[in-house]
Length: 202
Length: 202
Image 1 (cartoon, rainbow over the protein chains, first blue to last red):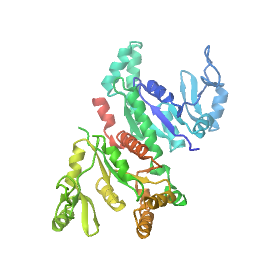
Image 2 (tube, rainbow over the protein chains, first blue to last red; image 1 turned 90 degrees about the vertical axis):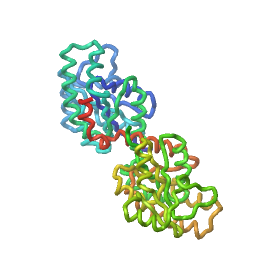
Image 3 (tube, rainbow over the protein chains, first blue to last red; image 1 turned 120 degrees about the vertical axis):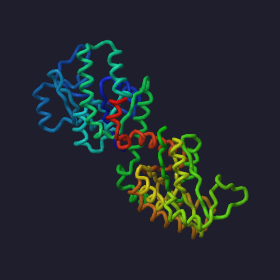
Image 4 (tube, chains in turn green, cyan; image 1 turned 60 degrees about the vertical axis):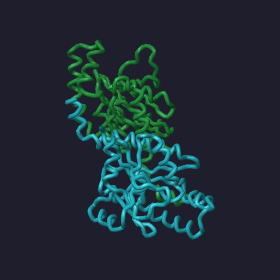
């Protein structure tokens, strides 16, 4: 069976990456991997389903042992993708979607140069700002922090492979863009270094 | 208006490139350009429609003047793509399909590094041979010549961007592959060197 593609989707606040990825995950060709975390499970969450819940010591042991594909620390807890989880999905032939921050994306690209990095963007900074304010759920301070963070995130754009723009109500279009990217990537010549020999071998 | 994409489709005899390209051309997003030739018009053919009919002297003057995007000599006549024709299609926002030989493809890539080169292949050399014999329209000598030619053509495979395989009755799949490639290419980061600046300006 052909291995799946490792797809990283990043995007600033308001890019709608959660919605777009949910659309992709409706198809059995795409999968998430279950992340590991050091935070305590909330009521209803299941070990191995929502997250793998592990101790801080165990998480740090895994980082040191090179067992994490990427990880981040947020509000005092670690969150990350165990390599083993990711590789199980890819070996099953499904495309693995990692919805991660720019720093984690760079780490994935270093470990898996064959990964495809996609940056999802609102149509413009102005639209992003309007979307964040339109939500009406966040303080002015938090909105400003998110917009500032976007300036940092966009500095990584040149290291991504594709940029997909999420226009108003465009989640379906974006999902279709990503499906097209995956279909094209599977036919890229650099993924078929043996194509010529295989052709004549029959 | 955004410029169209220059798409080169090559493929050995029996790859079905004519059928696949005809599928793409059903959509107004794709176009051929009218080639120039030195051969005489046949009954019913129209100047500027089937071909631009020009003299040998005129064709050679255009080659010397760098006015041909690519050309080839076949059975004593020149055939080629006038740059002006190609650029008119691209400026109209449509994707231009050039169905050309490997040598011409290399020339296009040199002149237009942004061109996308796609090699269409039968599933294998054995299947290609069976297809050519199955047609029952060609002499054994001609079939052998085509198969020999294929060995030369495939040497250029590493210089192509994508390889698309035409399985039995797979013209629709191949057209869909090429549409996905075009959609993905339009979102490739290297085609948007100003994306970051535009995002904040926008």
